[in-house]
Length: 291
Image (cartoon, rainbow, N blue to C red; front, side, top):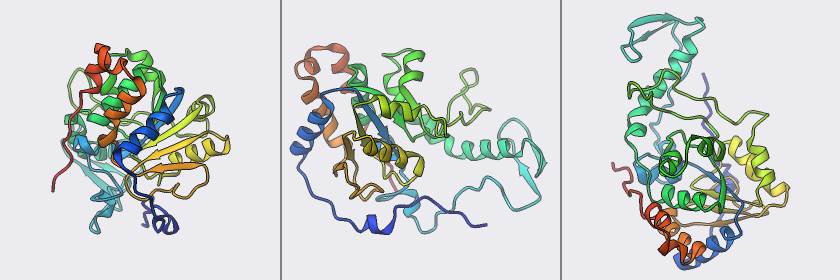
């Protein structure tokens, strides 16, 4: 069986990128975000400092030549299901539950790092700008729930569900057992009737952070924003699928190096006298993967 891992076209990866100082980056990002009504789209890059390895870019999972995807549908007629979700049995392929069983197994393997991860500097500074409504909607490709964790002490379930949209679903914890929920993957929001299109339409500008946009479900949102004439700013280290796309401005610098200063530049004195902003913008770990 042939499996295609989403990648960045070669013509894009060959593109060059201009260097920029941290101070200049902070000034430009703050200028972009200050008017407010910004939609933010994030990818795996924003969770690297929480210890979750990215997919592409330097040290990404897909950059390992020995990387092998976890297949949802194995080749044998039967698959042994170990004591992972409370039962040990052999399942015959073709059973209606096989797809869900295998999805849960895949989720189980990736679950411990997600369960233990904590929001990093980037998550928390974005939370500060969500709290002030400069960022009105946050769309994430990540399934780690760290954007929700970063602002959970400030927002209830209603605003979180309305303003944080998970493009590819989410891994989550069963509140009663603290183990992997049997509904391991929530319904993704990337279908044809996606509410994300409405978010792009209603926002004045689109900010992209920590993403190569290699998957089309994310890339099409940037494309749509450009088509509508919305300003689009990308903050990412390394090549991306939108490099060279007319209408997209790119700054190549790690988010954690600039976002605290961006919050101060956007909010001015509020960033130093508002106790909520001071607290949330100074939270966040810095613990990138090792080895």
